[in-house]
Amino acid sequence: MQAQSEISEPKCAPVGATGLKTLKITAPERVRVGDSALLTCSYDLDNVQLYVIKWYLDEAEFYRNVPKKDPPHAIFPVRGIRVNVSSSNTQDVTLVNMTRNHTGRYSCEVTEDGPTYDTRVQEAQVFVVESSGRSAASLASLWTYGLALNILGMLIQATFTRNRTLNLAIIPEYAKFLASKNISGILIGGTTGEGTSLKINERKQLAEAWAKAVNETKQHLMVQIGGTTLVDVKELAAHAENLKVDSLLCLPDLYFKPSNTEDLIEYLSIVSQSAPNTPLLYYQSTKAKTNIRAGEFLKSVGNRIPTLAGVKLDSSDIKEGIDALAASNRFVVFYGSKMVISAGCVIGVKSFMSATLNFIPDPSFKLMEFCEGHANLKTAMESQSYLNEIEKNILQHGGYVETMKTAMTLLSNLSMGPPRTPLKLLSKESVDAMSSGLSKIGLKINGSIASSMSSYLITKY
Image (cartoon, rainbow, N blue to C red; front, side, top):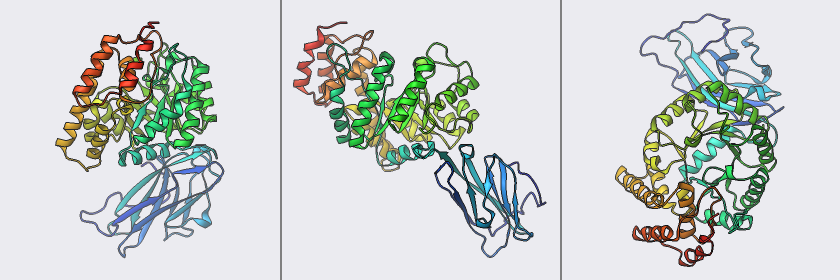
């Protein structure tokens, strides 16, 4: 690390140096603006003396303590950080009057005394948010912890009446249905949810209805706000934050697409300012293709968007996931494709979203057991193969949104209604063929719901 130097010290240690055995940093995940933060660096020197402990914010040193010096403390001006010297020592550093500018990666660097001068470093991410806000780090923790308990993110489908107006009345039942399947993460307004086919006021109504529903079911609510004009995206972001949703997902502009990483960072930075207390994820969609790679974006953005929590990839590109994971351990990486859950687990991805969780979550849960080391590869391959077979059976009858919506209606007690124009209803023949095919691979069709579909199959537009 580049640090401001005040004392000289050896730059390397002899081979076989011992003494400094363990190092652990303890820091608050989230700090409110104006509050203080205690950061602790615990270590075991095994009877060797401490030479120096240094603290960094990102790459800049802001505090060090050298026990042999008088006074032992040294403070360096970094982004307005204020250190309470009387509460800081060879293990602790206390920061006061924290601001949003102090969000970042905090590192403690411990060096033992000579002759070895062994040095080790540990780091932790700290986010400073407004009093009502949620940190990006807490989002990553929530999803990762949830997945360790076999909980996956759900791509919610839009629910329409026969006349293709929003059916908001069904949402509480929809939320409870998913909760009964142990689905605790919900994304609305995405591609599967026909978000870009909704008017701004409809997207707000949808968010309001789901926010009310999950208040009872305690599910994590992510709202996709992008895919429209920047003015509208900002309005949707502010509205979602006012509803206290858990996180935001943002497609870039669908026509005036960002041409490079800096353009994307600027765009998302503007969006984040309309929801400064809500974690934001970038939605890299194959339907809004750019030349920007997720890994390049995450590596370049650093802390320039304080609320940025990660990315959602809807492709099956494994290298994209590898690069995104390697960019920074600060960010969470989601795959939106069920086809790569097993492969994603192998490279280290822990977060997935899938439309099939609407109606057949068990295979995905079994795959997550493999992710966490509780199932063998053979079991994972069988579950992945079954998921792929289900998807192939469904998608052979039409487009993704139309067929997934039909499958959800066939396999649940809920009627999703028709898709919105320009998407087309499946023909009765296609619905019957899908129903037959799903039955043959062991899925139970809801006969009463299936028969009720004929009431709107005759409506083509």
